[in-house]
Image 1 (cartoon, rainbow, N blue to C red):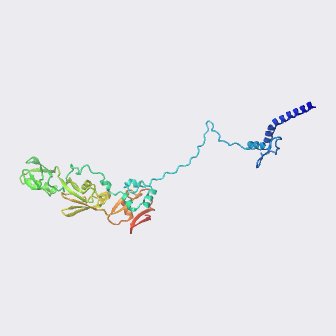
Image 2 (cartoon, one colour):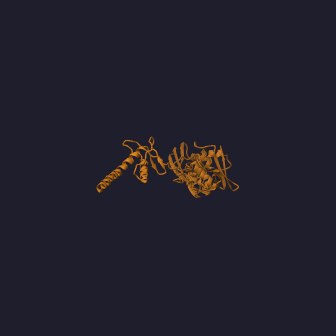
Length: 380
């Protein structure tokens, strides 16, 4: 009887061990064919019938295996195959660089103002007082006096015109041939007299060169006949003139006797910041002999009032008049001096006119009236 019970127990032990080994394989096969239960719901495979749970497997272990088998792993992007071109990833576009603000208070050149964008011009005019903007603009005409001349005297080897006024220190060269042949070089003395060899003394100072030629020929005609005469100018004298008023470098200047008003202005550096370019006088013996406007020469090429200087002339530069500034899409931006009220179109013409990028529908005007800043916009 004990032997039978031992055999019976041994057989059931073998059955139980076999069942435990085969249960996971049965569970995996059933999970692929049907549906499994999961905590909080069910995952149903399409086109399959519900399947029963594996017998003998605990419910919590069955739920864990069901979840692990039905959750898909995260897919990684496929690696590029040899020879395959992959599209580059899009990058976030960089922000456009912001334009640097205009430094207020520094004087700028016309080229610098022409390079300013519309946004920078708006920032300059809307956020800066008109008085500071005016100080930043360059004066029209100052470039003419920017470089000092290498010498204050003009070129000496130039022909002397018939209207040249002879004075002390001028050298006169006389050549005579015919009945008498000779040549001399004589100088006008400080008393203004000229000593002619074999003809005496004549007063030469104050004569024009043409008058001096006739006077010399007349004197020699008193002593000789059948002769020809040639009179030329040799070394020219220097004269002393004074540049006063609102000049950049006022003082006394020694210039050539052929020097004109513009030559003296170049020697003195031209008008200062407070000096006028349109009110320049030459005073001689207490009288004003000419009024010179630099704008006539710079804008029109008119030098009719650029007279030749005499010893002791005083060049007086008056105070600057009304100034108006113009910038933007014009050919010559800067500060312009006005003698009288002008129209907007005339001011634009004075500045060289509009450029090809200009927009006539928007012209901004800043003005001070009754101690207030006014901004006007209009079209032309």
